[in-house]
Length: 297
Image: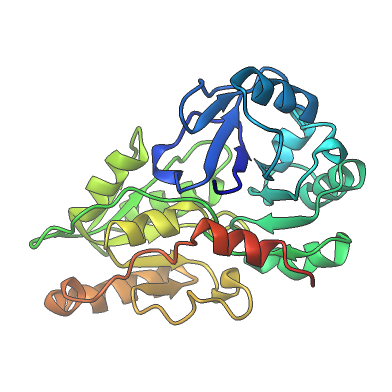
C-alpha cells in the first residue's frame, strides 16, 4: 500500500486535489475514503482521528496554511509526528510582517521543509530567514477546473475578482479601465472556481491583477480554462528560473497605457489570439512534488 500523504488544511474537501495516496484532513472535512475530520488542530488530534478510523499514524504530514492562520489557528505538536513534515504556505503578502510570522511559527514548530505556494519572488528572502529547505513549486498540490474555450469568444478583456477594501490596486485599475473606455472591458465576480472557468472560456483575453508579490490562483485558473491572460505587474513575480517564464499565453503590462496598447494590438488580430495554444498549468504529481520538496538543499 502506498504511504499516505496527510494534507491538513482549513477548507472543505477538494475533489480536484485528489491524487493516489492523498488524504485530506481538517476541521471542515467529514470522514470519507480519502478524508478525515480533525477535531483538534494538533498532531495529538491527528493521531486520535487516525486511531478512530483504524488508520496508522504514518506518512507525510503536509500542512497547508498562511500567515493569518498561523496567527489565528496554528497547528501544534509538529515534533510529535513520526514521519516527514512539510509546510506549504500561501498568502505571504497578507498582514503585518507575514514572513516574520512564518519564521516564528517554524522556530516553534519545526518542519523538514517549507513550500511557498504562490510567492516565487519572495523565495530568496524566505530561504534567508528559515533554516530548513525552502522551495516554490507552484501550483504544488492544487488543481483547477478545466473548461473548453469558446470557438467564438467575446472580444473583451475580462477581469474576475473582488474589488473590496483589501484590493485597492485592483479596484483603481478596474475603475480606470471602465472610465477610460479605451478597450472593450468587462468586470465580473463569481461564486466558485467552476463558475469562473466557464466565464473565462467565453472570453478571448483575461486580465490578472496580482496582489503585491503573489502570483495567485487566478494565474492557473485561467490556464486551466485554456485562455490567454495579461498580467498587470512585473515578470519578477515569477522569480528566477521559472517554468512559466516562456509561456506564450502570458502577456505583461505595468501601466494602464501599456495595458490598453497591448489589448488593442492583440484584438487587432483576433484569429491569432484565439488560435494560440494555452497549455494546462504545470501540475505536479504528488510523489514528485514530495521528493523535490523534501530533498536536501
